[in-house]
Image (cartoon, rainbow, N blue to C red):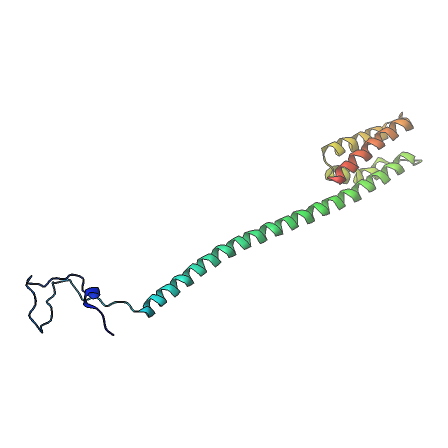
Length: 168
């Protein structure tokens, strides 16, 4: 390989500050070296390593973002499934309570203990407005001097609240 002397020398003077004699090698100052120019293979290697490093760094950030998106997607799926399960449980509890309430009101010998399990399950699963309406139906149903109109009015209100509860 042929290198030009101007490219490879770092300082252009001799150690004695006199021009060198013909045919002699130039003197060097201490610490001044003849530089070897990098060939194109070295530049290619450095460029390739830099490209690999940048690719790995970009992949790391992309994978991190992808995993965060997958976690949020799984969380949304879990929340949706839990919400669906809660609505199903509410629907079942409400229908049992209304059925038991009808048997309690229309029975010849009504026992409050037959109504209480479905009452509590409906009360636990309900939202605040529906729970107040459920409690009110129990109060009216237990009243021995209730009229059929009072009971129907309370049942109508509890049905509306239950429907609102199930639609959210």
